Image (cartoon, rainbow, N blue to C red; front, top):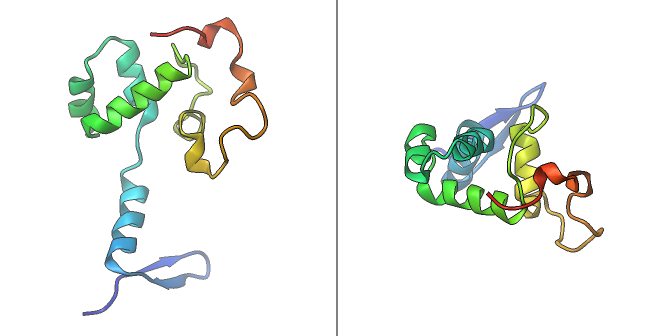
Length: 118
């Protein structure tokens, strides 16, 4: 059986991957977490179970996103809060940055709009 391969770039580079690596890349490419939709529904007082059904994300994923938003005092969304922005805001550790380096986690969000808990 041949190892899965993925072609990337221009000109394409063929990557040889084991089955787990291949599955992980495919999942990340096609099943990105829709942080914005999860939080939009949550802020409309939709239950986490219903959010899970509506978005196709597991209840654990929905719960983790909501928990992190609460921890960080996020109470509403604006147009600048895209999925990539929300991912880096909520899960800074996924970006490979150590906690505690550089002071305030997100100094741009110190206004009253984002303070408090939902």
